[in-house]
Amino acid sequence: MALTRRANRNVSTSIWPGFVDAMTALLLVLMFVLTIFMVVQFVLRETISGQESELDILHARVAELASALGLEQDRNAELAAEVGMLNANIASAEVNAQRQSALIASLTSQVAAREAELADAQSAITAFEAQVAALIAARDEAVATGETLTA
Image 1 (cartoon, rainbow, N blue to C red):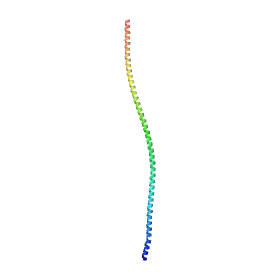
Image 2 (cartoon, one colour; image 1 turned 180 degrees about the vertical axis):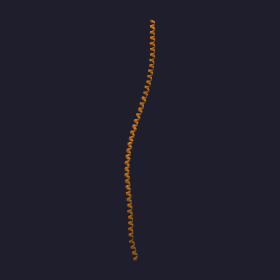
Image 3 (cartoon, rainbow, N blue to C red; image 1 turned 135 degrees about the vertical axis):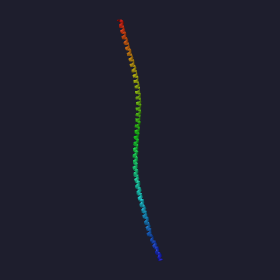
Image 4 (cartoon, rainbow, N blue to C red; image 1 turned 90 degrees about the horizontal axis):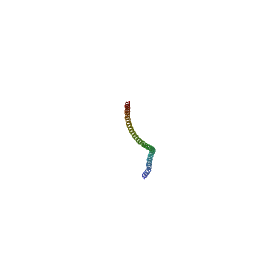
């Protein structure tokens, strides 16, 4: 009996070192997992904060580009208004050029008509001068005949 009692005592006393070893191993595993979790948590936090700062930078860039786009749209509207004004000026200049072309054509036809009238007047003057010369010649001849008859 003494053997059995002593064997029972050895069995019951030999469980505690195994239990403590198992608990220590479990505690070490738990600490390892907790450490890994903390490292992963730190890395994720740094990644997220890095992404947030990048997002802030990108938001600022988007705002800057939106402002530039607004300025370009304003400039585009100004240029479109200027193009419209220049087109109106071109149309006005074309109308003015057509009016002046019509005036030039009218004045050219008036000059041609006056030149024709001048040519007619010169031919009439030439004919009248010829007629006057003929009449003077006839008068001189009549005076000469009258002097010969009186003499």
